[in-house]
Length: 129
Image (cartoon, rainbow, N blue to C red; front, side, top):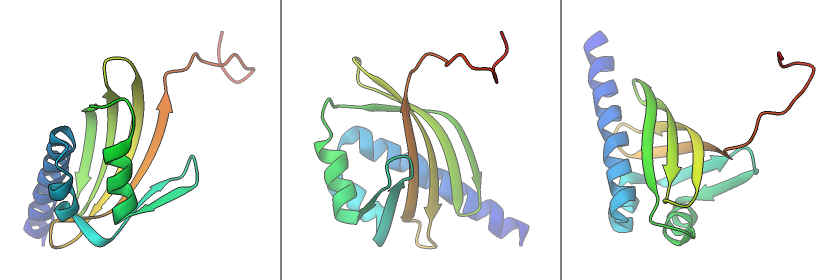
C-alpha cells in the first residue's frame, strides 16, 4: 500500500511539472489532453468556476503574456498537490496558491487557484509594531 501511495505521489508530481511546461509552451491542445473532460477550476476569491473549455480560453486569452510560473513550494501526497507560485511577465507579478487533484489516468480533474498581487501590509491592531 505504501508503494502505491509513493508511485501515485511521484506521478502526481510529474503531472504538475508537465502542466507548468505546457503552460510555458502555450500548447493548448496538450493542455486539453492533460485535463479531464469534467475538469473544473475554481477561484474562491472571485467566486468564478471554469469548465474545461473556459479554463483553456482563459489561459490562452489572458492579457499580458507570456507569463512565467515559478513554483516556490510544492507538497504532493497521492493524487493531491498544493503549490505556492509566483507568476510574472516582466511587468506584473502575481502570487498564487494552487490545489490540484489528479485522477487515476494522470489527468488533472480539479484546480483551485487563489491569486493576489503584491500589497503593502495593513496597519492594524492585530499586527505588531
